[in-house]
Image (cartoon, rainbow, N blue to C red; front, side):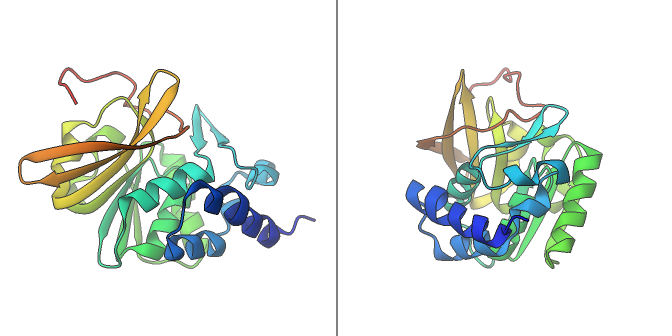
Length: 217
């Protein structure tokens, strides 16, 4: 039988710390949150191998390194109100719930959203809310958000998500450019929404984002 606690510690030490993740609260959360809970039972042996995990229907859980670096890039504070777009089975939501005041996880797939709700509850977290709807539309009912984390690759940031970021808030996402994903940090100041490149990252394309909108990024 696998000792998941040992695998989890090895993941943090060999995959996450070595990829410039230094936020102590995030590292603690990654040690506390059992990633295997968020992986289909038949694939739990793959939970800590450093790769993305296929969830079916073209969806996948991003590699732990991508998730960790994106969340660190967002610089989540204990008072922050956070939206995770593309929560899938809820792993990112659970990590964010350790760091923020509250987190809304959003997924277009009702079955994935249901599993996210069950998984987050199973690990004892209560400061989350899981919703179902089109990812590119965000979740306006809870806006504005201090932080939006897009857990997957997108072609560009749609206007709906920009509008849901609080003035002074942040959005992190992997912008797909061919086979390369570029993790970006966007910051909103008044009418300005500016982004900067942070690192290259593999991430699965999220549904609803593959076709580029007509407007420019």
